[in-house]
Length: 421
Image (cartoon, rainbow, N blue to C red; front, side, top):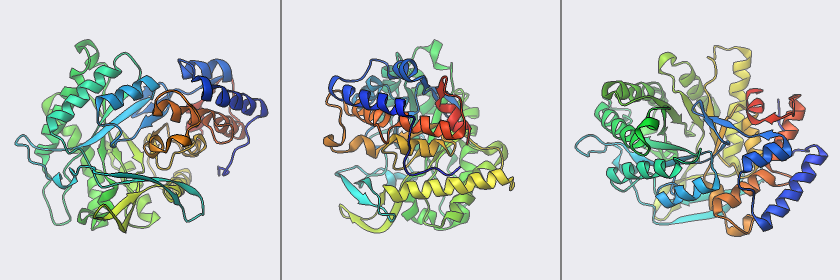
């Protein structure tokens, strides 16, 4: 179905959301948002990421907001469903990194408004860095600390990695990077909790296809990109089998290439048609790339805002239409949505296209006056806005979508809306 640009929720729901929006802005929210939403609204916001259960669908995307134990602690306190850690650069047992050029420290960040081609205004954050620039051992310690901090909660901790990707003129894959890095990450992930818990569930892992790849020589040919998508999941799984480190769920964080929408569709078709080498899940899709813009002495930067969500939703619509026509498209792979999710309404737009969770980054960095809640940490204030905004919040948007889909509202389950797509 085609979603409107604004929602009109049932009147009583909108009135209740407005009441709670204003009340919680001054007093702070309930101790358990999930329990409150179920009791007061009949809304079950449980979700999934990598096929694993989540308390709610909200996550922090990999980046500079998830690279310290203190940041993770704040997100656990706020009750995020999951946190994707900053992307580490893979290395071999000698410490060599084929993707070392991506280990650039962020010296400065800039949050600013951006106007999309549609005329809609949004936000984007610009920075110079690409990946984790500290030592690999420091990253492993972050995984252990994050798992420990989240052990008494239901917040899922997700490592993220940039593995070797061969350039168009490279024939060999540096498999030692895959084996060594994957083994060490799994060991750290298991070490962060008691041994009785460590192997009770598989470890989710994101392979980060950075948006800056769109401006790199590595992405010079379409054929090479499609090879990456086919080969990476197999190499990660092979690494796990060789080191017998436990179960893993491998996901690909898809990037927006500097090609047209048709190639984005080809990328999605490729991962779905990969048979036994399909990823377990994917993330769709991180930022756009402007090769002509300069920031902090660097030519070419990634950006977000309305153009990003417009493109993502357009491509996802076309992919769903092809799937519904049965044009050789394999059963869908579960995905987590990212890209200009600055309102609950936008999250529901992605849910209507099948997303089972949402990853946000820019929205947690807005100026303080963009959040109406006066108490709590920034993540808590962002969640208040996302859930309860009386026009664009998740509550009113989800109920309206369910009404138009003809879904039961006793209780209304977020996952029913996602699966209805």
